[in-house]
Length: 609
Image 1 (cartoon, helix red, strand yellow):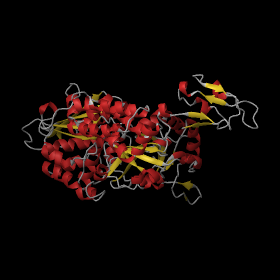
Image 2 (image 1 turned 135 degrees about the vertical axis):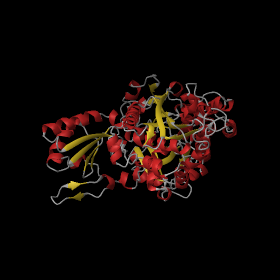
Image 3 (image 1 turned 180 degrees about the horizontal axis):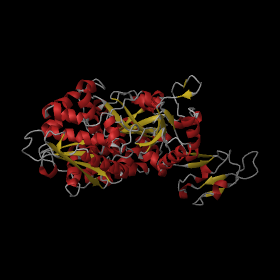
Image 4 (image 1 turned 90 degrees about the horizontal axis):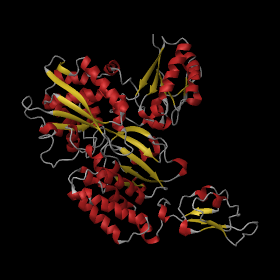
């Protein structure tokens, strides 16, 4: 009889940290201790707290072990699994109430920790809980009950009305009502070939929400797409996933094969006469294929370029047939909405943004990882409570939401409630859910340039406003960060940005200027400092950095000169009082701004400005 389970994270983050070795070590040690009949080792998807991987959770008590190494495994097995005494020094317990049992042994529940206790997991409900490669474990968590309910108890129109009433909006970008999209495509059921598509391409830098759902709960997406097929009258679906997600692709294929074996995909599902099949199409990592028409063009085997709209995909999409497209996170909510009802889902979140949202929390934040919170949660709560704040005593400066298509939110707006409308009002957007945190050491002009450089590379080139306009924007930003900017450049940036937004063919070009416009709006003083003072306040833009040696602090040891790759440091004629050697000096004309001098000065005599 199984009395304990050892759940080992098998997501990409923990896998890259060696979680497979941890899992193998547990299996080996459990066999040595003769516990194979009592303890089961389970590989799961991402738990969310990626900063502390590899992660292991032992149930039924829910003890959360972080940063586990293979050499820790024998102690955990012998102490915790054999003797019932958790290894306290390895337990993650930040913010949790530490509880002791009747024997005085310490126990910390995962749900009590600061990172998890204010989360509400719907899309991520099974991630880190079940073996994603086992359909039986998914079924044990009410898997495929929603599909059965939809096919046997609801009409297609009732399914659509339920999704509409739930208030679910697309989690992949602009937040279009999911039920409305399905309704547009629902006409002529049975008479017209239709398709259901899933966007799992996820091209935003720093975003990994969809990847984690596919790695941790692929059956949820399979089930939801079958429900969508029933709702609109489609018998074929495609998941478009980037080839750089090998674990996600593997587990998704396993899920599809298992669903077919169980009769949950294919012909006559649940004996209702409904047919639905699912296939995978691999993308090559083109950001523009996050745009729905470009994605469909790529599935068709053509170059991924957007098409003019209208007609919209609900009327003329994949292979010129009516098609719906939602992203992974959107689909992951569908089974729970069908099972628990529209009223349950709509009770979560804000008036116009219902449910929860998954964010990939990254950048200058302590607890990098994956979080799911109700819509309307403040940015402050996500950063300071769940995220654990800014490391190294630095100050929060800004947060970037929506990836290259989004904007930068300044510290003055940290109490903003995160939902679709609030983010649009302050010049950003939800996007797929990337949330990059920045501190005082980030230059906002450089940040704008970074995201714009990305979109310039990712533009398909089909329309002139995006192809040429974004490159002109990038040239102006390059001019500013190199110290050659003029005040007139700020007007040029705004004028060109607004033209690109209004004239570009697809969402990539229409949103590409957002990082520029939002940083101009909230951090204009940094642009002015670059242009007028020829300085980068954050000390990031290399051509505006100036290293200086304080002659009063310099003892003349010469370590800076020995480590200077450009040989630009020379000895002066001045010797500071109390020192034996003459101080050093940097010849600015040939300085390459590498910072080697400052890094090798033990006397803090060199400053960067």
